[in-house]
Length: 400
Image 1: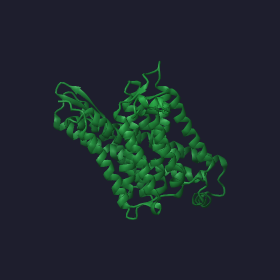
Image 2 (image 1 turned 180 degrees about the horizontal axis):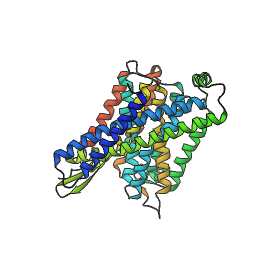
Image 3 (image 1 turned 90 degrees about the vertical axis):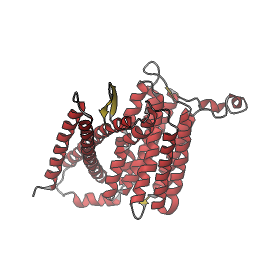
Image 4 (image 1 turned 30 degrees about the horizontal axis):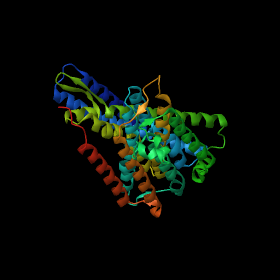
């Protein structure tokens, strides 16, 4: 019987071959609908396998990096893993901003953060019979910072709900609520992220179990050069796993191109177009969920391996990177003359208020018993479903 590693790489090779053949069938001219549909289903299944394989590589490499550096799984989840899984949100937001779609720049981040807390965190708590254990550091330190970051984002890009009449009676600060992200506001968000990372570094506590594992596993003859080479190899494996996830998620979301007899393309967007779902709902649901797929897969793999600290840390850290890092960089870069400034529609205010309330609720739920129970996970899932239902019911008219 073949070794497990050989079998895994054989499956990966077969998946890449099926992926290539499926993509070629989708792009074939002309191609019948049954062939395209079959190819889409094969592409979806193989991409899921590739993304899961990449997530397994990333989690294993991140765990080894944490052990070699003597850091906790929570710290690695809040920083390195969270930064990596936020890459799709950053790419989508910046590209949309350069195309003049400021609504997508902000809405993608807000939608992804809601998806992370409702669907991913809720699902992780619901499927675990004993709920999801929560470290005290998260409730005392990171959750309040996440709520503060959400309020900052609302103040910077939200609209003035009171009108101009209130600004002359001691409420001049309401001018901040102008449905536009200024360059200075982007700088403040980015600086807040830098300050948070510095604070994490200064407050770090070596993981005793990790340090013990390193001490027990490391041979006495291992030299600093060997340890450095091993750490570099883990960093390379982490990067490869991340790249596989990001590209796989891009294929899962896909795109749709208008053609004479309908739409041609791949991924979830193509399926949505076949069902006549509007671009608005595709953006706030499918694209937001698609850019959160790395967080979802990493959370599942980490929880399956018993790395619950990495699971929760990845989600909280990713939300922080999205709001402070992605939006902050977008605010600094997306200014004249490089690109149109980031402006948003009044509808974004409701989403920002909903996100603020959700973060506050999640923080309160984390305090109860040091874990998220199954019913609390179910509550978060129901809130997410309710939010998506509202998006579908209030969507602009779908294209005929």
